[in-house]
Amino acid sequence: MGHVLAIDQGTTSTRAIAFDEAGRPGASAALPLNQIFPAPGWVEHDPNEIWRAVCEVCRSVVGEVGAENIAALGITNQRETTVVWDRATGDPLHNAIVWQDRRTAALCEELEREGWGAHVTETTGLLIDPYFSATKLAWLLSNVSGLHEKAERNEVCFGTIDSFLLYKLTGGALHMTDATNAARTMLFDIRNGRWDPKLLDRLGIPAGVLPEVRDNRGEFGAALKGAFGAALPIRGVAGDQQAASKGQACVRPSMIKATYGTGCFVVANTGDGDIDSENRMLSTVLWQLDGARTYALEGSIFMAGATIQWLRDNLGLIGEAAESEDIAKEANPDSGVYLVPAFQGLGAPVWDAGARGAIVGLSRASNKADIVAAGLESVAFQTRDLLGAMRDDMAKARIGEIEVLRVDGGMTANGWAMQRLADILGEAVEVAPIAETTALGAAYFAGQAADFYGDDAELAREWTPSRRYEPQMSESDREARYAGWLEAVDRVRSGKT
Image (tube, rainbow, N blue to C red; front, side, top):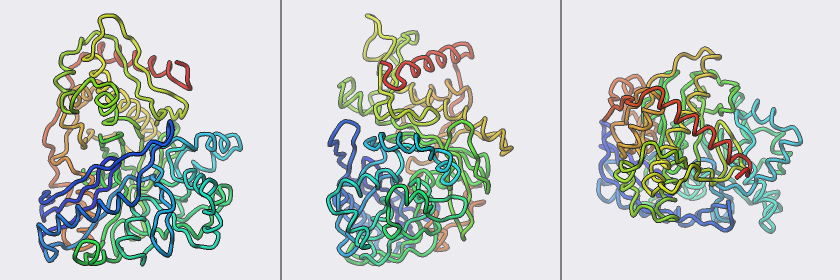
């Protein structure tokens, strides 16, 4: 058996990749995923479209490498996206509500006013925000006709995308999730490893709808032959950012990675201790193995690659995302233009659901290159926001100095953006040896469970970057640019613009 098959169910695409014994990607297939926008700030997916796409891409890869050559199957997924389905049929009962969706902002404000903030942070490691699954599920139970009654009769399953796929792949035999996805629901006690009854009661969520929580590697049943044309053992499941950390071999405390996809997610390994952040970072489960949890600090940027998509699709400033690099090179370095992509509010460390996007600093001399460069630069500024907050938290917790930033994801192909990232951070940035580290992490979890890959120490020894960017900008220029960014962010907070 020469491969591990990884399903990577993302926000904008569905893909399957076969990895060999050295962790090299081989056969792959991908399909775009439609996003549905029913109202301003609302974002949905069709779960049936996701399921059909998973079957199609996996059948393609299995057909190319041969089912007999696949040792195990791993799954990684967009995390907080929320699905409810009929327990008997497996049919979705509403569109999936995507992690980007902000429809529950009012409910989150209500929870804050009631004083739930401290309990949520102490129990789940998170902050009250529409980003997480809890209020999305509460909204579904309250707004989909008859759903709450069905849930009370134990006729409904709730899950993140991994749980939905496991249910479908196993023909309804398993209603499970893993600890990393559970930790992103705002319902899971990350210290004690169980669903929190107080939050379930406040949000009106029947406990029976929740999946069983398991380790990230181990037995997750088998994909039925009808799904991919062959029965395949499922041996690993992890949320996308935790899988990317695994794929980047961030296996020691203080190791840190950033994944630049639709959003950007910065995750720092904090070992066996969860940190009570003083800077509104999230404490979460990095992975759980043999019942023991490793923790992480995480910060999220809602709009990274999605900002470039917006420049392309909404403003028409670029024809393809790849064009942004050459166009940014034409920008005036002293334009003073800032793009704050708060289209879905602002994530860590600001956490302002009411913020809205803006382009500030425009003059008659400003042009499209300045705006495109500002869009790319906004990702670097937000990464610096996160790293500064994480460093402070980790220093106080005596975790150790953050190691060099390892980066992956589609935006790392943009040399201008990566150089600007190093410049704004004032430190080196190392690009992953392969772009698909999220899928690779899922393959590592599944492959280790199947004795296909070595242990974490071996994975760490073998990791080498494909490129390394050193800062070239002067400190005075760096700090002046960053000060301008902070001023621009302040201007968009809570609808000020």
